[in-house]
Length: 129
Image (tube, rainbow, N blue to C red):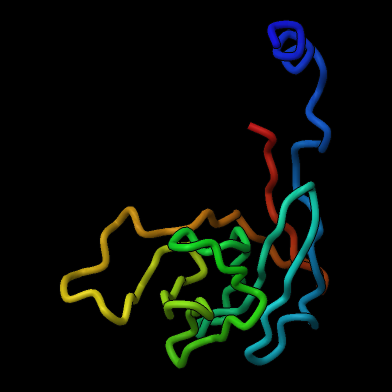
């Protein structure tokens, strides 16, 4: 175990740090959700109501549903989980829990990545650490 940890510190990460192309802007027209498998991880990409693109971890933090498999885009432009209807904005913040009687807690969020659109492509900033 110690030798494995030492090797992990000495070797570079398996994927380079930097801007990585994950999809085309054409993939996100209308209310489409794009499931992405890249960098050894699963992501979902969608376009919010304001036109910004969000790239989030693919699994809902509540019970682990894949947001790209049956998820929908709400009228407010948030990505809605297919299981319990939690809704996430392009920044990964949970903006609605249907059965929550108080404000949605700040800790109810999923990981969002920094996104840039350039020349018809969507890039995310990926850093191994």
